[in-house]
Length: 187
Image 1 (spheres, rainbow, N blue to C red):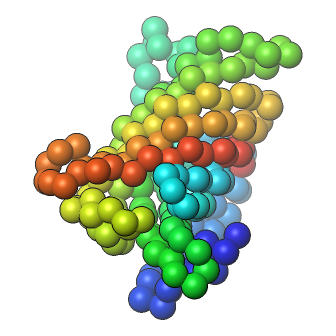
Image 2: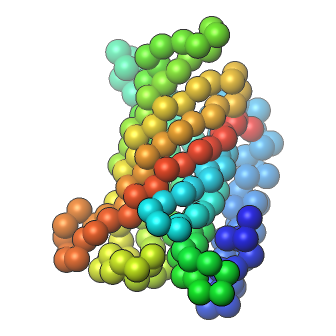
């Protein structure tokens, strides 16, 4: 995807360090044979001409839930996001770090496999406060998500609505909206 190849020179060193750290982290967790650690790749499309990719590490933490809530899945997702707006000759890009606790609840089955709804509210750090023709006013944003997740066994596919905004702490606060198609799996 051209989003990864065109993030700009001002962030290239930081991005390379973060990607190297993420790969090292993913490799080290892959040595642990538990279904607590996972990864996700989100393909993102936003308002107008915004496209992106989100690479995430997921830690599934059922032990934090009360006994009565064991039917839920709780995981924490840490991610690196690359967003791009516009065409090849005239474009804008943004680099985003995010951490979000997510609850997933199975509500039905299709072909004997769970279909779940998920929701979460987390924190995000945007590299640029001016993106896609909008002034979002703060580098710190909330990452909200609502999605449908279909289980494939040790993997999942999901369709999500994602919203980034500063919750009105500073004006303007137009927010950024995305649809995400993702694949996730346990290590």
